[in-house]
Length: 178
Image 1 (cartoon, rainbow, N blue to C red):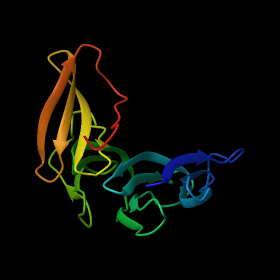
Image 2: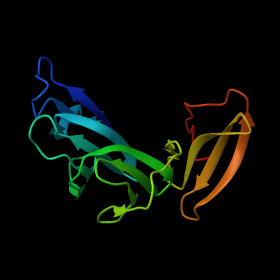
Image 3: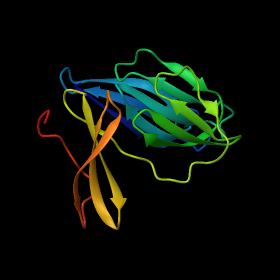
């Protein structure tokens, strides 16, 4: 929509401050800022399907580390896991691999919580760029030594290579819904 989500560090805050970092939302249409959450540190933050997924670290401030979900307007906050999650890695459009302090997890978008998994994910995280009509998403991979632009049909969960070239990389953007 019209919101930009970002993390911000408090100036002069000590390393043990449980509010040293804030997860913020700025609405460009209304010129309003909103604090979505705060933590001693944010290990990772990812936007997916209209929600912000983020991992807080409060290990050094005596708080609880969590994996959370919230909408950019501050509504629908959910704690999905109360454990230190280091990385949120997108393995496909609807799935995250979570590297955690206690064990690896897999999280499917829309689930109420992550599920423990047998092993750590060894791939890289995918950065999906959704089309304006939210029907397709672009991401870039390296295949056969070349940058490969892939479009995912979100409903069908089908991927199609649309370009492959040396040096092809992010950033990629949709200019219109096509």
